[in-house]
Length: 252
Image 1: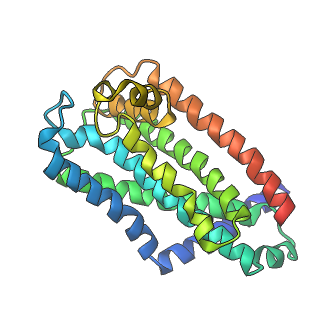
Image 2: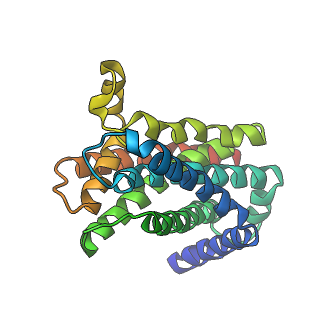
């Protein structure tokens, strides 16, 4: 039974990934905007921003990666919405397969496609001068945090995709998430912000995640940031998963 369940998920993953590779503009669109922001901040604003480091792209990269993921999960919501509108889930549920397999296919596709976007952005950052003294364990820790962050936002996207009444509504939820890194330590230190903005920036999930990734990539002590970052990611993921499955059972 377990083998059949994972086989069903594998089939659904393959279906969703074929859609991605047939329309590579999805990944291109997701990577272009963060790369443009990275170019803008490094080569236009970088000289005027004081971060305590000579290599601003090193400081900037973690926030850019989170922005790319926040942008990428909007497509998961869109694809789910279209499958619901076209009755795709009803067709799959009439077949001898696990009922949650089509949903997991979309979730895992989000994980893979966002990983591709992250790799492309890191390659561009390397060309721009990004350098890291992190070891293999630190890189694995960074990859784990980014994967958890992707899954957390993807389950939020599932809720939006299954609940939306229109195509625009399916993707609109992502805009606040894309904007969130701007009110964090992603682009400038929080110490430079007004007190009321600083209070929000220092107590929202993006700041702790960015600080943890930045410390890992620079091979610096991470402190409590990594545990706070993991707590945010796992907490959001579990809550979003519970609500997403409730909506899925109700709608599908």
